[in-house]
Length: 140
Image (cartoon, rainbow, N blue to C red):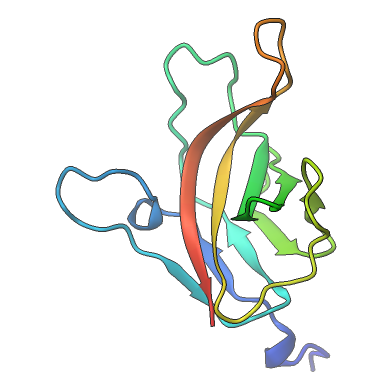
């Protein structure tokens, strides 16, 4: 007998090409995810292969970012070999002076992106975020 009740389980969102928010020349609009849980969700990268940009100076993603507005940017580490990430208040870190993360709210729409964050360089005083995949999530 399990002590976990169904309402406490987090929904799982699987990263795929159908939800990838890129310009599509075929005219097919990318899908958007929908969650009803305000506490968070599981983000699965299982089976998805990221395409790295030519001439890039990295070999894999290193960050997952959540963009909820100009004053609400959050991140968590992307780790090679890990395929499931719990996206919730315990795991999201505010970036660049963002407000603390306090959960998801009904009616919100936000972006989740996987990519590579490089530290500032001599020729660029800002960190450089290279997006490798991005999707949109709606909260019911």
